[in-house]
Image 1 (cartoon, rainbow, N blue to C red):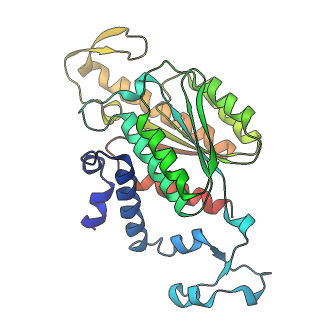
Image 2: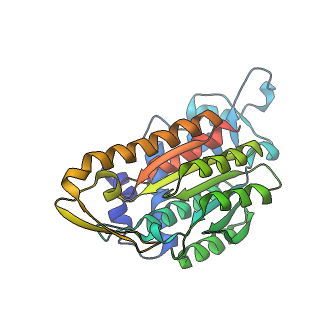
Amino acid sequence: MPTVEKYLKPEVINQIKRLDLRAQFVVKGFLQGLHASPFHGFSVEFSEHRRYTPGDDPKDIDWLVYAKTDKYYVKKFEAETNITGYLAMDLSKSMGYTYRQELSKFDYAICLAASLCYLMIYQQDPVGLITFDKQIRDCLPPKSKRTQLGNLLSHLSRLKPTGTTDISKSLSQIAAMLRHRSLVMVFSDLLQDPDPVLRSLRQLRHGGHDVILFHVLDEAEVCFPFDGLVEFEDPETEDRLQVDATSYRDDYLAEVESLRDGYRRECSQVGIDYVALDTSMQFDKALLEYLISRRGRM
C-alpha cells in the first residue's frame, strides 16, 4: 500500500519541517494502515470500547460497533479508558548523530514522540514529557486536553541534544517522582553500560509502571557501512579512535546484536516492552507497540 507507506518513511518525513505536521502525517498514515490491515478495528477497540467478555452485562453491548466489526464490544467506563503516559527523552549529544545527514537519532525520536503524543491526545489519554541528560531537565505534567498537544509539540521542537548523559540516574529520578501508575515511554540510544540502566528500568517496573523502551540507533550504527581506515569520534567525550573498519565490522555487528539481545531478554523477564529501532525504519512499528501495550492494560 504505497500511499500509506509514504507517510511512514523517515526520508519522506524529513521533507516536512514543522513538527506538528510531521506528527499528523505519521499518525494519519498509521491509522490508514491499521484500517487496511489485520488490525482493522483496533482504533474502535482503543478509543471507547473493549471486547465483550463473559460476565459483562449484554445490555452494554454496542450494536452499532457490532454492525461495523461483526464483533461484540462494550463501552468502557472512564476509569478503564484512560492511561497516563510520559514521554521520557534522552538529550545526550550522541543522539544528534547521523551518518547520511537525513534524520538524526534525535530527530527520529522527537518525531516518534510527537506522533505518540498526537495519538494519545486523540484517544483522550493524558500525556506529559520528561527530558533528561545527566539528570532530569524538564517535566511537563500530563494532561489530555487538546491544548496539551500544542504545548508538548512546541517544547519538543525546541529541544537539542547537547549534554553528556546518565540514563540510569535519570530513570531512577523518574521512578522516585511518579506517584501514580503510568506508562513511561523512554527514547534513547542507550550508549552506556546496560547493567545500571536495566537496574533503573526494573525500579520503574517495581513501582507498578508500564514501560516501553524505544532503543533508537542510527542506520549506520546498525549496518556499519564503513570500509578501510576510518576515524570515529565519541560525540560526548570527543575522544577519537582510528580503526580498520573492514576487519572490525564482524566484531562490531556482533557487539550491537549482543547489546540488543541483552536488552530484549532482560526487559522481557520483567515485563518491559523493548523496541529496537533504527533511523531507516518506518514509524508504524513503534506506534503499533504503543497500541498493543495499551490494550494489554485493559
